[in-house]
Amino acid sequence: GNSVTQMEGPVTLSEEAFLTINCTYTATGYPSLFWYVQYPGEGLQLLLKATKADDKGSNKGFEATYRKETTSFHLEKGSVQVSDSAVYFCALSFGGYGQNFVFGPGTRLSVLP
Amino acid sequence: GAVVSQHPSWVICKSGTSVKIECRSLDFQATTMFWYRQFPKQSLMLMATSNEGSKATYEQGVEKDKFLINHASLTLSTLTVTSAHPEDSSFYICSASTPGQGYQETQYFGPGTRLLVL
View (tube, helix red, strand yellow):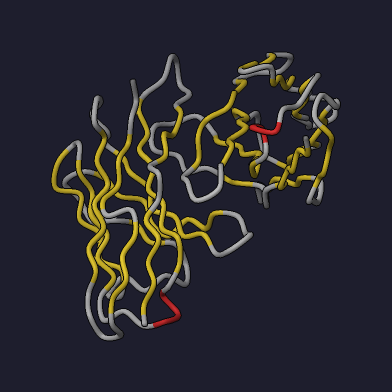
């Protein structure tokens, strides 16, 4: 079946540190890939997405590249801020209207001042 | 654009009562809406897929008589937790999908509803 694996958290970094959150997937076919962010007490917000191999999604200094050969979609940011503290979810979805998503377990990030 | 709202944002109720949660797409029409449940520090678990004008499709293990879903219009879906019990306490999140370019679409999530059953 389809699944998403993320690095276990929590991840604790100092402000301005480099961030990498690993995400790999298993899927029959070529899904779209997403990163969602959930701030404390809130719902999920779309952070970025990529719909085909070698696409790079980017937003708010975060970026991730769709790597078909390694079935990965690692999230990176060059310099994290305290306000980036949240839970990050990697997800996949196949094309087709109304297809539901498969989420990873989430990775909690804490950024210390 | 693509804003999804939920109401209420949190609710406390007594055991045995029913609670209705609304999910609205504010600036787009959503033929399909999804309902998720999230336990503390865990990922989202899909409960059901709701299509406007038809019966919802429930995931395995989700009681359809317990969690009633109605998708009466292109901008509104409701989840009713019937005869709620403390084990139903959770964070419920809805999402709505809109056709994207080509064949891919994106889901937009509501802010969630926290339910506490006493």
